[in-house]
Image 1 (tube, rainbow, N blue to C red):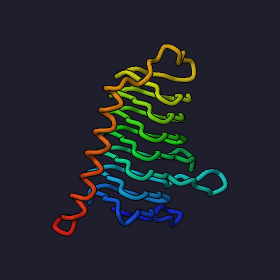
Image 2: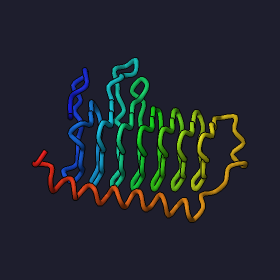
Image 3: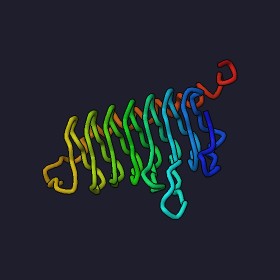
Length: 186
């Protein structure tokens, strides 16, 4: 469902993107080309700052937002998801937040007030809060990192983890054309 926020902003969805009919996109959202937004995802850009301003939530080209993902932002802060990135099932991305290109965010992970560099992998049930993760870092499952975390203790993304991330992105890109071809059958 595509709908306005209380301020009247309406999502902008590129014609080549696929948004599942059960997903909810509300407010100042920009969905770029060939994006897949899966069932029951909720993306809301509806909270304003004290001046009535809302920064957009931007989903970069060729990215995928999987089933049950929630993307929201506090007080109209910006959320940007780069190109070719995957936000896996039931993850929460809460702004302010910037996610780079070719990033994988795992199942049930939570991101808030953070910057995730290009080609990072955050595995399932991880929490990234109030910090900046440089490009190519790997966050193991169930780990919580924040401003106090010594990032030198985190490994770099392995070839296997990078290959997995690329495969997930490719698979979901193929779903876009498949679902677009049958969308009038729903």
